[in-house]
Length: 191
Length: 330
Image 1 (tube, each protein chain N blue to C red):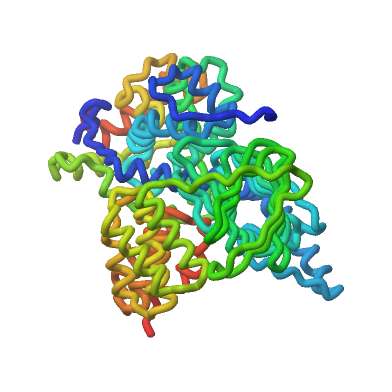
Image 2 (cartoon, chains in turn blue, green; image 1 turned 180 degrees about the vertical axis):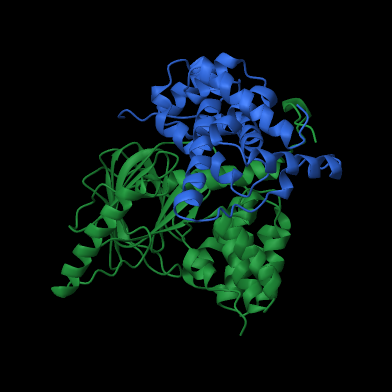
């Protein structure tokens, strides 16, 4: 009868390593399950890293495309969520740096639009306006400083985790956060 | 101004957003590999293709791919080709005229108008996989098989697994591994002549199914025969009588297609798309039809909104060029 692999939608929730294995085996249900399980986390993190911009969905798509292409390289599949978070931070950084480069050397203004539908329906309008201003101030910071601050202050990462995510030393991480904090304080943002 | 922490961050992700994102990702993952590669590789490939096309034009050999899924480059034997998201692999000969009629999670339907194609399909519960060759329907049960369609002659060769061959007005045949079947694809009004070759005859399998199955098949048969009125009636009944059936969204899309292409009734087409809440109604094809409908009704604002949605969800979609050209003031 040949070696036909049959894939079925699992009724029991799969563990992260099992999910990774099944995706590696080409199981389309596992791929969908992985996406559905982690979409909100990835999208939330993308939103907090970039702010309410129109290209958040693009970043989310890039994260999952990258993740599916490199899932065989994951060393600790039980920490799949953290691994996806790492990809999100890496791609967000690349996106912001590319924009900065274009603005500085090619005089191209970034036009990412805004994603008003990303705010919670229950969010008070004044809170939304305030956050827009905060992100506008964050946009003035160097990319590394901005991400270090958001990961530390918003996401609650430890200094070690921030350093690891941004692939810089602990000393650099501390310096970046300190500088970001003082710039934001000057801009009137409470930390 | 205060920078909130993660728990206080007022973001919201609806289920609709999740579904849209999954559809978009599925389309991206299904797209040919080159769309996922780096720009430099694309540029190099474009350069090579441009040179090849230039040489082809110079020597008078222009390629006319009729359909999006004409996948193999030259000989008449099946070549490595298209891999569907669910793992099914289709290898079509260069001269094969093969098109994808449906690619939904519940049903994949391909039409082989002529030529030869090989299908390697894994069985998936809840998913139908059918290949249409004229009036002959090959229903896949999980297998590796070849379909050849030349003129009215259809030949099905099963290498592994089993397929069911369905002919209008005749009992279904079950073809097992190492068996071949050869018969004529004719209009449904005439009985199809067939014979099993290189293999013992197999017992006819009685056709079974729910009323929804029967109605859907009736609609599809009418559509294949070109009987528009009958197809339209059956698809509309499918929408009305079985709204929760997974194929209802496909029926709404078919109604929209018929009303737009064959009846010049864009308002009816849009009504049909609006009436379906099932997931196919938001599919790439449905959205492209929506743009077309609003365009034909000269409802420019809605047309532009639908166009923007399409281009956002399907930046590399099959209808991109057509959709982009719509919603212009006349």
